[in-house]
Image 1 (cartoon, rainbow, N blue to C red):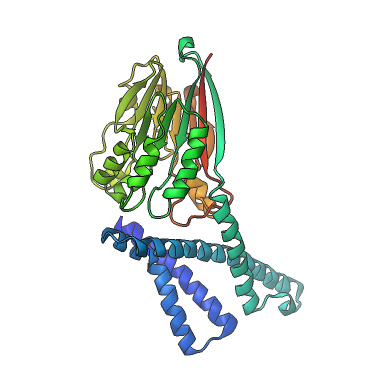
Image 2: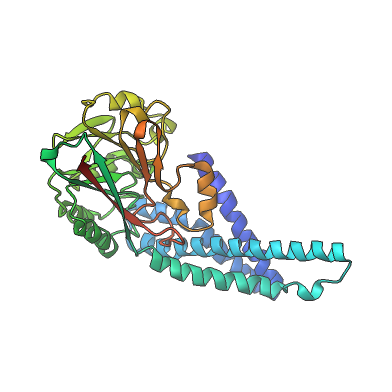
Length: 378
């Protein structure tokens, strides 16, 4: 965890330094303005820490204010850097072309001011659109025909939410909009594949009530994600269970006499030195074996010998990168990045893009989703 934060702030600090140098090159501000700019950039860099510290103190206004400003700023500076890289690549190509053609290309190169204004304008425009996209929840629909579903059970509709990140930014009206989509889908069974919570769980009574108002006929089940442990696993479990979910931690529950629902803890348990539990295959073996089996697992990781023991794995975690082009990086770490993947022995893996957002309340080329899975007798 310490290594993660050190790496994060080293890279994030590098983005702030890059922006400072671009502003200085574009406008050559005086010493006083540069000093003020440094103060603002340091404040932006430390915003995530200020949010967490003020949450732990039980404050309300400060963490919400710093979350909105700090995390929106995080998206803007990331997008600024991404667009800047494109312009830097153009400059490199122009320079190389000039060397090859033995010609002066200075007239074709953007000025220092242009190298700042174009990326910042693009970042603000994309960020504004991304703020809108993050609230346009799409419904992804999957139909699975299986002879393991008894005809007398009929069609069973499973609705998956993932990576909701209930916390300072995702609550009240925004959470209500998500849960309206869930209610409109008329689930027989609701599952949450981790990261239902985010950060400190202060003043979440309203969120608990909203979740409890959703009552599928076969219940609600959840598994832990990495953020349940970051928030404090005991508080997270209390929130999840009070919201009406049955939390599966290395357990199998039989639903409607037709489905075995297996849930595993996030691998964060091992990294934090907590009890890692059984392998996926060992947990899946606790079920009946002849029923349709769904594995709930936060991260889209597939153990080598597991696909033969389940019919469907539901995961999340990746957010599909949340903000392009960050998705190019996350796809390197998670080959099962987003969507449907056919595994060995006829098993299917679905990786949700996530229903909420982490950090910046923005999505770009990665719209949020709820997933509707209709299990139909074959």
